[in-house]
Image (cartoon, rainbow over all chains, first blue to last red; front, side, top):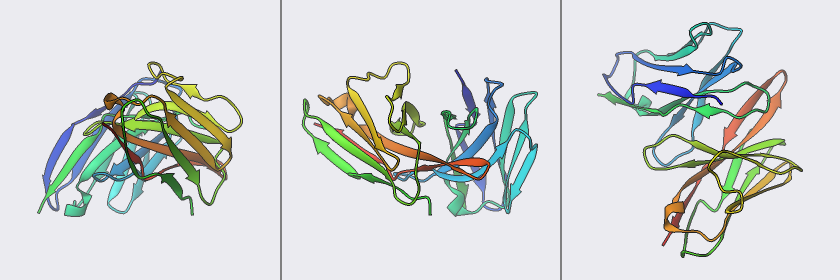
Length: 112
Length: 117
C-alpha cells in the first residue's frame, strides 16, 4: 500500500517568513496530492491540491510542487501569518474513489 | 455547499457499551465515505472505506466486528463502536467523497470525540 512520509514534524517560523513542508510517497500509482490544515480539535480543511499532470500550483500565499520522478511533493507558504499556525497534513491517493493516505503531520507555529 | 455533519460531536460512555456515530453529507451525494481515527497529536489513520450499498473495506488491524460500518444511503454512513473500552477513546472523523466534473473532492465531518470510562 501507499506510504507517505512528511517532514518536519514541527516547524517554527517568524511572521512574514516562508515555511516549507516536504512529503514523499511510495506508490507510483498515486496521482492526487491534497494538503490539509487542521486546527486543534477541528476537522481537516483542504487548502490546496495538485494532480500528477501538473508540476506546480499556486493559490495566493500557498503553493505546491510535485516531482513524480522522485515521488515527492512540497507545500510552500509565503509571508506567513499567525493564523497560519496549525497542523498541516499532506496526502496521496491513486485518485477516483480510492483511499487517501495521510502523512504524519507538521505542526507549524508562526511567531508574531 | 459540500457540508458533512457528524453526530454526536462528543460522547462519553461506559466500558462495555456500544456507541453509534452518524456521518451525513448534507448537500451532496457521497458514493464513498471514509472513517478515520485520530489520537492526540497524531495523524489521521484510515479505519475503513464505506461504499453505499456494499460492505465496508477495513484497513489492516481494524476489527470489523468491533467497528461496524453501515452505508445505508448516499448521504448517510454510521460507525458503531461495539463493546467499547478505554483504549477506543479517540477522535473519530468521517469524510465523504464526491465527483465534481472530472475531479473529485473529499470533505471532512467535524469529528466525534469518544471517551470511554
